[in-house]
Length: 83
Image 1 (cartoon, rainbow, N blue to C red):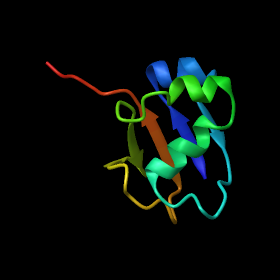
Image 2 (image 1 turned 45 degrees about the vertical axis):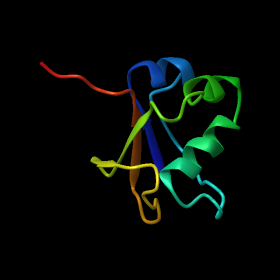
Image 3 (image 1 turned 180 degrees about the vertical axis):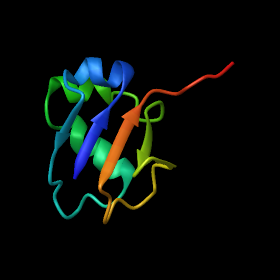
């Protein structure tokens, strides 16, 4: 699946996107964030507070318990504010 990173998540990881195949036990957005955090120091830094990082599955905002099966793209980004 394609993973896309925005803003400081991208800066901490050091890349804008990548394609990965998570293991079968990774079934939700929260599982994916935990798995990514274990991939190295840069990922651990980006996901050190998983309650802050937001996600979108195929460009639709998704909650941490959202299933990722069949997702073409998952994006991770910091909270947004508007004005």
